[in-house]
Amino acid sequence: MSASRRIVAWVGPNSTSPPGAGGIQLHLADPGSSGNVTAACFSGTSAKHASLGGGSKGHGVATERAHGVCGEDSRRGDVDISMKTNIVFNMAESQIEAARVEALLDALPDPLSAERIIELNRPGTDLHTHREYEWNGLRFDAPPGVFLPGHTSRMIYDRLFDGRIEVRDRRYVAMGVGLGVETVAAGLAGAREIHAVDVHPDSVATAGRHFERHVGSSEPPVFTPVVADVFDGFPEGVQSDVVTFNPPAVSHPISDDPDIVRNVCVGAPLLERFFTQLAEREILTPGGEVFVVASTTADLRGIVGHALAHGFTPEIRDLHDWQDGVVTHLFRFVRKVVS
Image 1 (cartoon, rainbow, N blue to C red):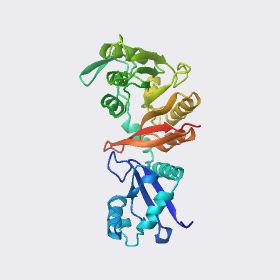
Image 2: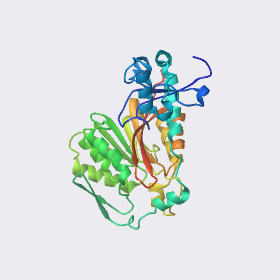
Image 3: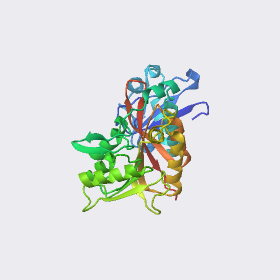
Image 4: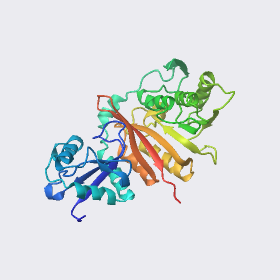
């Protein structure tokens, strides 16, 4: 392959493939054609097993597949199927992974304006009162200072409950546990061990009461309440197979109330500490997963950049557009085991 051509490849769900689609989609940008995509998109479970989507019997099939996945600019008649197939087979896994991550970062949206972020996150007036919350027919009581989950939190605990985030027979850490809905969901889904972590002691105690009420404590899963500032204060030597976090990552202050700041707008630096401590303390087991929810009210590239700096590989597991400028991302991170 000549040095004048640039390969961009990525694996798994992305903006041009259906939700849940897997495999590799390989795009070839041709600088000789003003950067327009001139190759078909390939799909497969790995670089070694990638094949041309839709067949490989002629340029018409190739260009139609390219048009369907890559867009109008890819409808061209000069696709050399054999050359593109060889590119797929000859690319190293590390090259494909690096290109996938680059494409993911490039595709992440910028944060909303400060004015819009503040407008969308105006705090309510009931945080310091007793409130109630219901999920899946279960009742939760929120004492003053304990935050009620929002719609973004459901992206985590609904998936814990239905298995899209698999915790059965696994060790699970709920970071920023708050009211404790995710620990209840994980307990009902069959998690083996659960650590409920929050910097706010009343939240940890509240999560414990709800776990005992809705799951019980007479048999596994083992429930451990932990008051900790991220992982400062987390038990030494404990490891986890799954960690979830819906962080207070809003990138602009919306209040002077320390309880609101703690729950909403600490910002991306909190995620830097989160990934640093995950890596340095080796909390994640080999093959373990980290799920983080963040939206366009936060610095998404900064968050993913912190993860990458500590050896975590990102994937966008799901997206939700709230039709008000906010797009929420559910990220999945894994960390390569260094041999």
